[in-house]
Length: 338
Image (tube, rainbow, N blue to C red; front, side, top):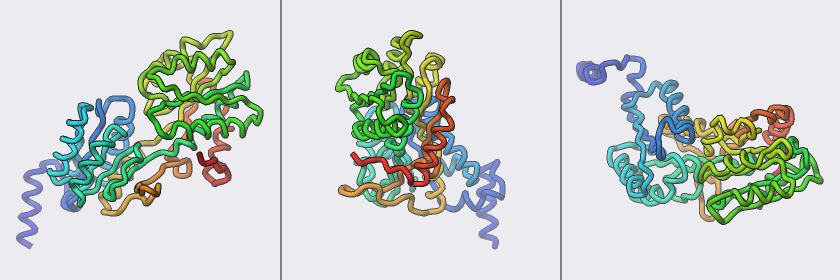
């Protein structure tokens, strides 16, 4: 009993504001680290979305900054690796990396520390046994975008402009077309995945052909939004469906006249789950891909892990999106494999 009292006294002395309520959590041994991408909190993109989940997990699980450490990279491969190794050597049992920028460094560092658990949010390309990949069903998102595009189109011509850096872009394009045709079977769908660092030429070509609604997962820069704004006119409108939180520029005032919706990935849910499972010392997810095996979880419409946020004119089609989302959730829509 005397030993226990000394232990509690020591904790209270070193953690001045720590109350008796979270004491059991503080001594449970949980040590989780968050490795944010460039910008960290305040980036209005992936990092901020993850931070929402981190804060909620800390509140609900009664965790403190001693339980959950947060770091930010400068974006270089050397710095990413250095920070991951630092956290691993510092005794953090679960290390959560934010975004696909950590893919290469995490592949290497997770092999160096096979007894630690690593999580990467929004990337599904690491097959190491101690890495859980938390990804979002981009095909469901593209399907919903196709439904919205077809519903909003006045010309019955819609298009998808894919980011070539995503291996899933062709599959997203196919799902977009399937979603559009589920609303209007005879609608014309155009799929373009530019092999250049600008989407302007592709957007211009589609607009000239009569396309009046575009969906794009382009995230390299804000040229996507700039080009749509420049092409849009009263005589020949061009509306945009984007992706949040990836395309942070969609939150600018410039987007108001053209944005009608955005495929939304709830990274906060993934961050919360990663910390919750770490605190419970449980395995997160299962095999999500074979040959090679990728472990983790795919967030979909079913558990509200993704959705379609509507804005501007897109709000006119909320009933349609709600109906299709219910069908996806119930498993009544099968998106063709690609």
